[in-house]
Image (cartoon, rainbow over all chains, first blue to last red; front, side):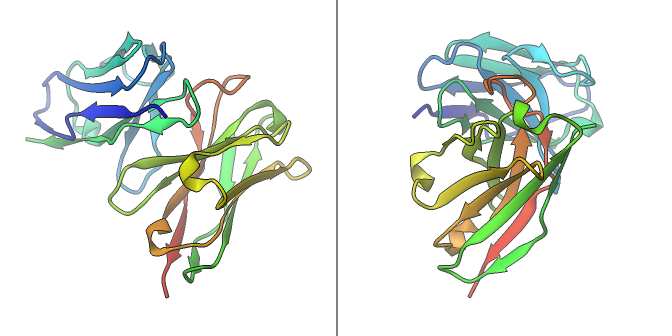
Length: 107
Length: 121
């Protein structure tokens, strides 16, 4: 099975900051990775698919990069509504697997 | 528009089974794979498996093999996830989530509202 190691597990940042979250796969997954944002009590929302493609309607301050085993989600200038938990998901090989999550908190 | 409407909250005793439904509308039901994902209180997301609504074929992680069964009813555009031999650790919100590409190899985009399953004696 493919393990997804996501870091950091939590992050304190301020409005306007640039933040980066990383996911590492235990083996190569090409670009078969998505990024999700989840707010308390809500279903996850897809931000990025195919590692770097921005979901329609998602602000351009979100971007994804990477291929193979290392992937990043970058938020270029944090907005108040971005404080949430973020997850990566690999779908290259069954079983699919999520990263452990990154909780982004206001500093 | 695509909608996934899940069944309501359940309370079950340890050892029992639960069957959660996910009724799809707004698209051709058999064209897109459906994932099931769960989230225990305060914890992360856990992938439970996937079903191809056209063929009825499924894939489950080893952790759930023998305890989970995913089925579909094409006449009602509904997928089901049944989990047996429930234990307290199965207390979680269960989500169905649809992919938005043919062939199934893309991360799910549309999600149900979630169903809380509580396992308690």
